[in-house]
Length: 372
Image 1 (tube, helix red, strand yellow):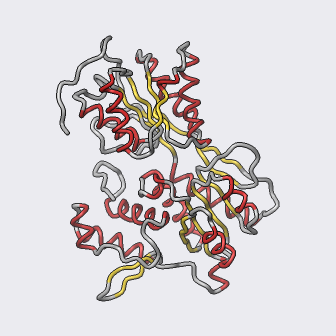
Image 2 (cartoon, one colour; image 1 turned 90 degrees about the vertical axis):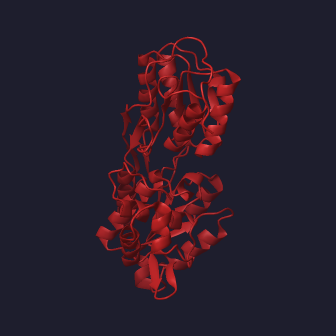
Image 3 (cartoon, rainbow, N blue to C red; image 1 turned 120 degrees about the vertical axis):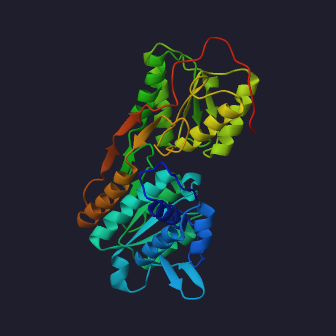
């Protein structure tokens, strides 16, 4: 968990979002005792009043249970009486590293879901989906929930199981190829990356590297397609060696970019699949002794890199709206179970901040200093 001092969200809200995301992913399990107010405040360098407000509000939401003299525990809010079950929406994730780490991207999706559920007077429960999915599926069948919102559900085996559930299901950020019986809300990643790469080309860049994840989902492939389209339209060749595989986390990207810089095969710009990757890339460039963007332009995706210096150029996704729309689609499905599946694609926005500029002078540069 970390606090972004430059974010417009107050500190207590950031703590709430992070705790909610970690509970949703299963990183903090049902029945677990969370850190006390003082310990949480000390670790985040915020006031105890701030952490107390976050914990109290989560307790009021029913997500936490405070026991005098013992601590604060994660509640199992999938209660057993039939009326409550019909009013409970289950949010599930496959434990993807982005979701499980409590990233701002997915925390904002969860906030959009929660605020919509609160307006409707419904309750919310979380469940991680871990292969072979027996525990998750048995819980859904046993508890007869109102509906399920699944985040990052791309495993074909899981999708087949979800088809057989007699429960409304909405997928968020989980697009796959072919026909789907599920309602879906996602974003237009292709146009966002296209705009970012086109901006780099307009600045004069011709050697642009794309950092892709280990496992390419349909959403990730669309972002790569945007990169390729921008190059092709500018008459530039798509070079396979400039599409580099790395993990989702910043540390993996840091290692990959560091190796590339030391090899001497250095592009003038790096486009990353997400902001966390871009933060790792920026750190590697800085530790190599170069400056962003004077020696290397770096672009992310997701608009969660507010605390970087320079401020990260990125693609904004309406994550809060994605969560709210998922809840709206679920309610429409409950009211009209036989209607055709809905597919909602939300627009994105390219944000040119301070991490990209004109390409450096011709010829590779040598590192001038190291900080790690």
